[in-house]
Amino acid sequence: MSTIDEVIQTRKDSNVLEAPLNSVSTSTKEAVVSTQTNPTVKVALLNNTNSSNVYAYVSGLAVDNNNAPYLLKSDGSTPYYPASPSNTGAALSANCAIKLGAPGSTTTVTVPHTAGGRFWFSKGATLTFLLNPGPALVEPSVTNPSDPNYNISWEFCEFAFNSNELFVNISYADFVCFSIALELENNSGVVSTVQGLPANGLDAVCDKLIAQTATDGADWSSLIVKSPSTGARLRALSPGDGISVNNSLFKGYYKSYIDAVWSKYTSSDLQVNTAFGTLPGRVDTSTSELNFSGVVSLPRPSEAEIFSCNGIFASGDEEAKAVEARVAAAFNRSTLLVNSVQPNNEVVSTYYKDNITNHYSRILHELFLDKRGYGFAYDDVRPDNGADQSGSVSDPNPKLLTVKVGGVSSTTSK
Image 1 (cartoon, helix red, strand yellow):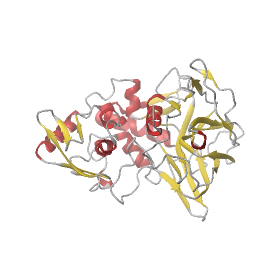
Image 2: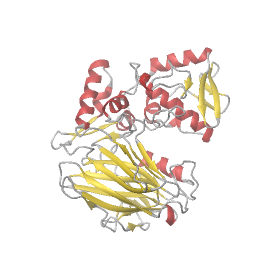
Image 3: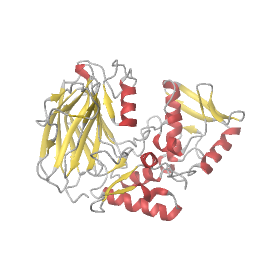
Image 4: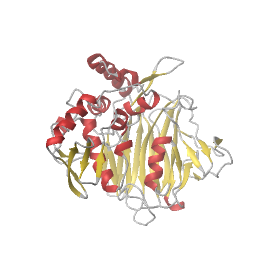
């Protein structure tokens, strides 16, 4: 893999992180070395759960060290750069579990310039990270039942800290376990926040998934994963990850909606606005593909491709990917039949109104305290100057990031 973007995409697909062959990135969230920001930033990890057994981990690619994969050691400040092992599945040679204090307490860590960063948190047990030759960091997975972390309660949020800014977002595009909230203060004292889910977010999500299955008979309740030992709710998978575990889920779910979209855009154009300009798309009846002026031609997507925003929605050059992201977002939000100018004519109040939609993401946005957070991979698609849906904070002059494990409230989090 030659670029940071490719490495991060592979990490999303396989839960393995390794250094790219070069530092080129097309994303403003990733990095090359420069001097605008300080080389490190302080991060306060606030234990807002009801547990005294909460552990944190920090992982990513060290921008100032040739994008080498690293984890912070248990002291919260020393980067550990693993050597390449001779075999797959090797253990770490350093303790990288940062134990948080009692509920209500804060533990401060120091983070270097990082691409593809994650703050990981577990309750009740430490996590297991492994190494493959490269070195490549093998991270926890919720789609592999044999993963040593599978039956542990754990969550993460994502960050990039580079020469331009600190960027952090909460993401439930893969699964929900417990709430995480963010607060970022800059050197001028300006504070920005993302509030995340309420403290009882997992139970609330699960209850609504069960209710949705009762309404439409689809597989939403099958996304709930329970502890094999206690039967308690452990997490709720996104529909994309649910299909990864059980490919019989959601078979044909979007068929009638796709039929209607293909019918509509056989005789009229779907206009897609991107940084490259506006491209008209129309279904080519000879191929049954939605063709955007030869830049990209999309066959009818599968449910897995829609929910996970991969496959046909993650291929081609940057212009093609820009179109794909906007079309995928419109499929997840089910706005293609009510808005033919994507995303610039989008109105948030019309999202998820069709009966056939990504109800997992709908439920999350209903429950997010400030309505912001990733419910699917392209949830950052929005109209020019439109409201953020993705739940991110960023600043070119960061002073202190506070990550609130358990959410904004110190009440019981399950």
